[in-house]
Image 1 (tube, rainbow, N blue to C red):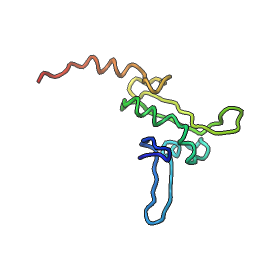
Image 2 (tube, rainbow, N blue to C red):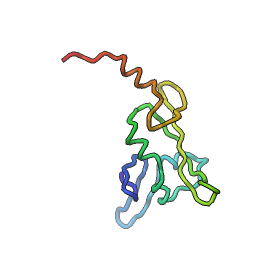
Image 3 (cartoon, one colour):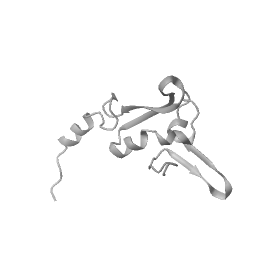
Length: 111
């Protein structure tokens, strides 16, 4: 679904059926330690860019609302984990690097 700022994100959800207006980020909603989400966070959220750059099915994202520079504003902070190689991913846009090695060793079928 598209965020209010035009980026495609699988974790953003909005419902306007019959006058109901509800918006939520399901990634931040799954984290009870995060501060409250509000739609303006979607403007600077790195998750849509990560999802478009890395399509690995083993990448698992954890997000929370944190404080930005000097604590005056808030931003989304993202951590990533690879469920196949069990390592923390330092650069989520690139991936862990191990999943691509595994895929390269699988022989392609002849047609």
